[in-house]
Amino acid sequence: GQNIDQPTEMTATEGAIVQINCTYQTSGFNGLFWYQQHAGEAPTFLSYNVLDGLEEKGRFSSFLSRSKGYSYLLLKELQMKDSASYLCAPMDSNYQLIWGAGTKLIIKP
Amino acid sequence: GAVVSQHPSRVICKSGTSVKIECRSLDFQATTMFWYRQFPKKSLMLMATSNEGSKATYEQGVEKDKFLINHASLTLSTLTVTSAHPEDSSFYICSARVSRAYNEQFFGPGTRLTVL
Image (cartoon, each protein chain N blue to C red):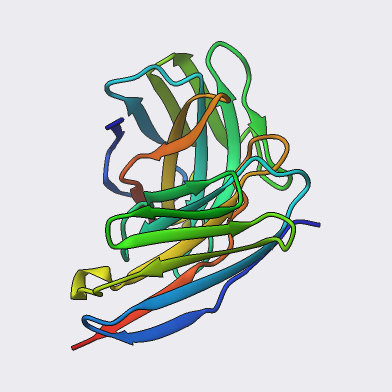
């Protein structure tokens, strides 16, 4: 079956760094997306990894290891507006995104 | 960036009525559009995938006669919830993809449906 495993909730302090881990099992693989979703809103795109390694984009970076079925999202210099759910979504062989419940990130002052 | 709009953003209706939700790609042509529903604190659930000009492919457990999907053009897809019941109350989100060669899905802002 297809499966996504992320922590349900994480708490971090404003200005700090947090790493959100994701392990996945899919039927085939066509890359992995990270999305941010604020409560009551639709997801917004953060990053896409299809090759192993680290992709850096401003305060956010995403890492992928295909052999381990593992990815993480690294958020630096945390701001209060970063409080949201973060969704790890690998794409399977049918080019469909597989969604987990996401990680709710709480930022404290 | 690519923009997807949804209309309405919020709708309240009586049980037994039908509700139509529109999803439009504003600045690109979407060969494929996806319809999701999301319950509070739950993951996105794919309901169906629609390709322009062809019938939608529904996920297992989704009633195609209840959730009618039309993808009449490369910029518009509609979801009609027929004979809505309170258990259909949910957050419905569409997304659009340009092509398989470009995998990113662009999401609409979502539609909050409340059935009384």
